[in-house]
Length: 346
Ligand code: SAH
Image 1: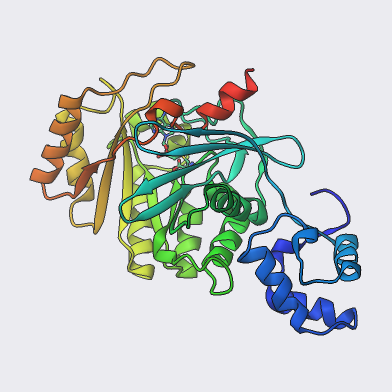
Image 2: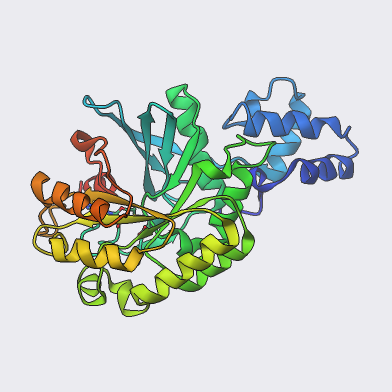
């Protein structure tokens, strides 16, 4: 928030302790305040009922608590998926999704307001990027969904609007914070960062040796087709991306995932599947196939069921693990950025 107050969610318990000591207050207050923020997930200092009124006023003078205002909440009748539209302090809106799986609840968060990567099939990028989200805004996406739904979140995917690697510092801060013992303590194994493939950043992330899963939005097995779908392919070749993925595996021991959105007659032929299998041969990886979710601004069509299944079977035959991603919330504008876009268009 653009004011001289500090973002209190960014502070560690140790930072809070230093603050209270400086204010000549007992250090144990730090733990209390920290619990209110990161365990009870309150939005306001006034909710901190075991903190005296004077102390709450002092905190209000120096800090603000990031707050996301709920604009809309859509619940899928098909699978219980929930889509949230949140308004940020500056009036920008973002969307986040809660998905319910047998193994637990997963939240898909946005990392930027809009996106500047320009992928042709994606609704998030149509109006470009307005700004990066702070790590606290990302935390609040998870916290607010946990508060509203009343359910615990066990997995996080950074697959909403935005390119996480284009907001690297804040994304890494978010991951470290949300996985820390003093926070929600979501295991890094249960956190996935999805990227269109910013090679230098993949390598930088690898060097940090976090335990998170890397997912690459590949969507093509040759550079020419990839360039038609994703402008970023003009900057990095598939070969460079795969090298960076091998490096990621070497450094972290984590299997890399590849996202492949199937677009009818563009990237869904058996020849493409065959190329893909050759490319990924010998890599410890997994391929997620997703029939593209058509957006009204573009005329890409999704591959039919038969083509998707044939593509998957061919990969499997060639020894590549592949699953067809179950579509979640198809009745509530499930695709990246669709809900925000329709809200902005009024
Ligand atoms: N920028 C990151 C993360 C956000 S996009 C990335 O590119 O990975 C999350 C995933 O949804 C990406 O794989 C993206 O290519 C895919 N996606 C976006 N719009 C889609 C659509 N309309 N149909 C299917 N997949 C889509």
